[in-house]
Image 1: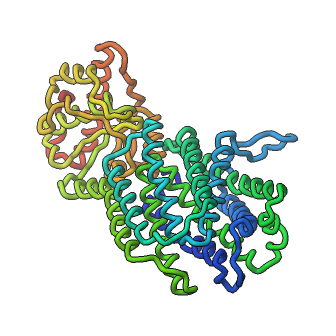
Image 2: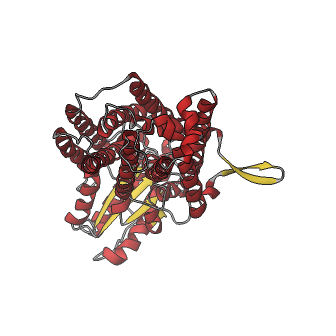
Image 3: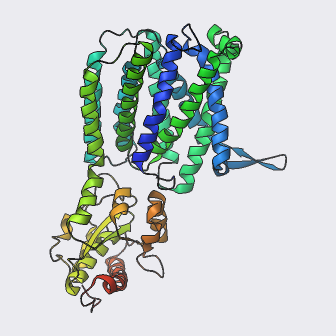
Amino acid sequence: MFDHGIHMGWLTFGYFVAYIPYAMLVKALASGVTPLASQPVSGFEMLPAAVLGQLVAMVLFLCVTGRWRHMRRIGIGGRRIPMAGRETLAAGFFTSLIIGATTMNYTFAGVSILFMLLLMRGGVLILSPMIDVTDGRPVMKHSWLGLLLSLIAVSVALGDVNSYHLTLAAVLSVLVYLAGYLGRFDIMSRVAKNGVVATDRRFFVEEHAAAPLWLAVLLGAGALAGQPQLAAGFTTFLATPAALGAAGIGVAYEVLFVFASLIYLDRREYTWGVPAWAFASLMSGLVASYALAWLAGLVAPGSSQLIALAFGVGAAAALAWPSAVLWWRSRGTGAACRVLFVCGGNTCRSPMAEVIAWAQAAEAGLVHVLRFSSAGVATPLPARPMAVGARSALADLGLRRVPGRGNPRRHRARPVTSELCLVSSVIYCMTGAHRDRVIAMAPEAEGRTLRLDPYGDIPDPEGQSPEAYRQCAQHIQRSVHVRLCELAESYGPRGITSGRG
């Protein structure tokens, strides 16, 4: 995650907290149960004031935090003016559809916050793995499980809403909402969400600035085209006390928009982040619904929502499982130092380094205090075995099998994750570019992320002659020897005496 290593758990919690006042304000105004408006306010009527409130909050956020500096610049009249790019302008358009449709969905009569929330989140939950698979992004087993449990939670919760009335306008609004996410995620996958800090920051800021501007333009066009409620929203409604509440809706959405965007931009698959986002939304909807039932006498959710909550907690546990396992292993094994080797596809250089390191550690008597693993910053789907040339080069070094670690033929490539970086004591990368990718994903690991060869990159021999693989393996062997000698000063009983495996 690019934003200074903010943990996904804190982002999800922030989104949960921000969504509660947003949902309550929208439903309260639409139901006419606030001191600001004794009569129900239509969605079209409140949207202009809401988008104006979001615009003001957005400008303040970008200026106070200094994030506007991440926007690209264009020259106009000898001056450099911040401007969004073509892709982020398009993403901002789709995001404006999401913003407008979300607010509209809570204003329809005959439906509850939770009912519309379940329709919206359920749709995005279904879209997320489809987009991941289409984009070639690996979907981990725990992500599929989290998705399944989240869908079960949605299905169970719908058992309480069979008495609601879903109008054609509400159906169309939900479809616009889902179309917005489909377009937004597609663009985000192509131009960001890759662990490169500068790219993700630019996308975040430019989309952030473009979305409410697009929504203001679309609403203004509707008002000029003669939509009476939109026209009133831009004129007479702004002079009423209810306009303050509508502006507060925009401010609340700006806050939750920040947290949601950072969740989506996490380089892991959408099928990982979307269930966490959906779970936080469901919990926010429950809190908002019960609060409005208690404060304003609106209908409270039924018992099925509590059963859905249990499945939501299960989804969250499934998503957190890999982190918990890595944490437990890093403490339960007694390993004082966990070493992670990183290359591009995790089919050649980093798995060779892992095998060589285990062999040298066994020779030096360090296998009880050192643990080795490998991963790649660009691991394809499906996970591939170790390259034949790499296995042959290891065999030339006498490493057909690794003591206590099985057969290199069983290796399967896997991606680097922030969890792996979190529990690794030191991370050795094959190139400086790999190091940059790791740091972009896990900024907190910068001080312990190094090139394996401190003097330069280790070239990729993929597609070259067997001799190129042998030279690469020898280069890695020398570099691993140097690095393990450094580690042996702290962990080794007798040091490392040989550069051979």
